[in-house]
Image 1 (tube, rainbow, N blue to C red):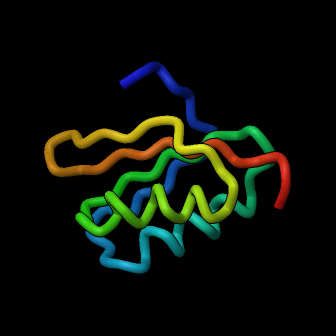
Image 2 (image 1 turned 180 degrees about the vertical axis):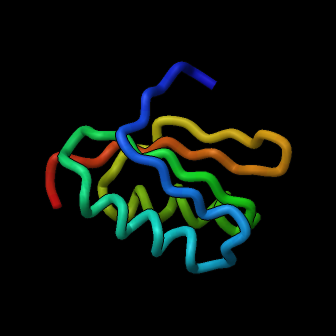
Image 3 (image 1 turned 90 degrees about the vertical axis):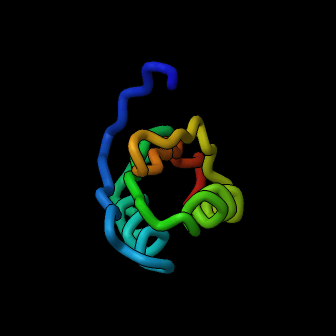
Length: 81
C-alpha cells in the first residue's frame, strides 16, 4: 500500500452493511475537498460498497487493501459536495 496520509479515520470494524458506508458518509461531510478519509471495515460487503459509494459521490478511491481480515480504504473527497 502506498504511503497515504489520511485526514480522518473511520473505524467501521465489526459493523455490518450498510453501517460502514453510513459512517464514511458522515465523516466525509466534515472533510474539505481533497482531504483523505481512511476507512477500516471487516464486512466483506465493503469490498464492493465502499468503491461504489466513492464513485457515486464523485470521490476518488486512492487505494484499498486487506490486512489480517481488515479492509482498508483511502478515499479523497471531491471538489464539490
